[in-house]
Amino acid sequence: MMKDQDLFIKELIDLFLSLEEELLDEDFRASITFQMGSFKRFMQEAIAKNDGDMFDAMVNFITKNLHLVDKRVQNAIYLSFLGKLDFSENPHLKNG
Image 1: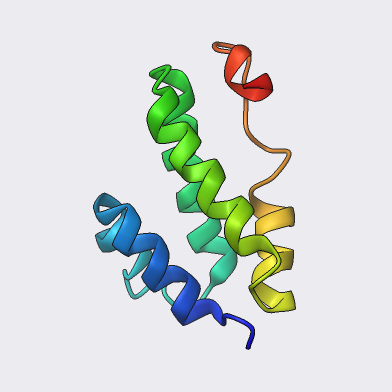
Image 2: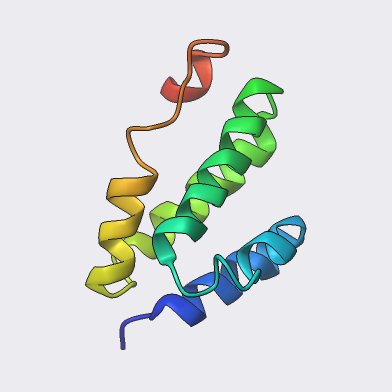
């Protein structure tokens, strides 16, 4: 069974509780693209703070779920998230 947007976002919030308010905001809830944009900003903060543990936890979540989510969620991850992170401040995180 493929994970839909609701299940994917629920599991994301379970792991990163600080994202709950933004991801469930009425303006974001209907759009997986907006939700992935929020997650990208959250991950970018971890990169900027050189928080390797948080970064690794996020990468592990995405890696574990990428093949389990439906095509709509998968597309949002690829289009709104992957490839848009800026590692210029801490390039070692990209290779770690």
